[in-house]
Image (cartoon, rainbow, N blue to C red; front, side):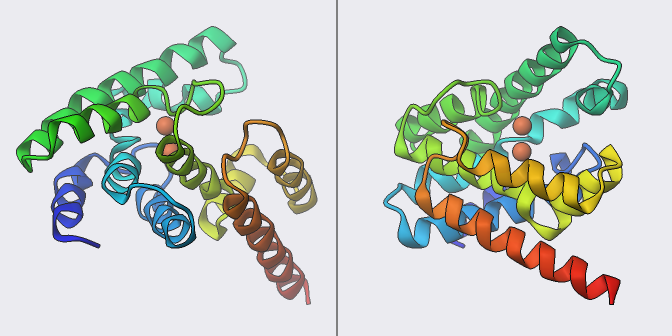
Amino acid sequence: MKEVFEKIWELALPYQDKRDDKGHAEITTSYALKLLESERGNENVVVPAIILHDIGWSQLTKDERMTIFDHSATKDEKLRVRYRHQDEGVRLGKDILNQVNYTQNLIEEILDIISQHDTREGFISQDEGLARDADKLWRFSKTGFIADLIRNKFSFQQLYDKLTNKIELPNFFYSNKAKQIAYDELEIRKKDCNGAQK
Ligand SMILES: [Fe+2]
Ligand SMILES: [Fe+2]
């Protein structure tokens, strides 16, 4: 990664992966870099946006952070914490980007992506689409898949089917490349599972 991205990464590190989702920041960042290899997008927007997108969770209490996974929580309660992690992410992200003297108009674009990365319907730009694709691909990664299996007590097949059905949903993925990565990842999950059963 470019030096400035490394600096942003270091400054964000204390705030990462605060939702029992160890590896989320690293894995989603590596998907963003992978998407940028073939998709046209501005790495100066996409990479900082994905590094910083979830740091806001660190500002919520543990109970608040886990509301999202609590089956007894209402839709409104879940939405409220989603908005809060986005708002806190914008606040902290702005601070970090200013600390590395990032370009002002890029900061605005990055913060706009973070501000609604979990709640926005549809996509506002190529860069926003790619950042959100990278975030969603987490669930298809080995680490994200296992975390989901354990947390929701899904069987392998239940989760496999659930994720397969998401891939082609309108406005789920922005890029075809992300869809392809998602299918490829699910194939590997299946092979891993079959291998584990032998
Ligand atoms: Fe998020
Ligand atoms: Fe995320």
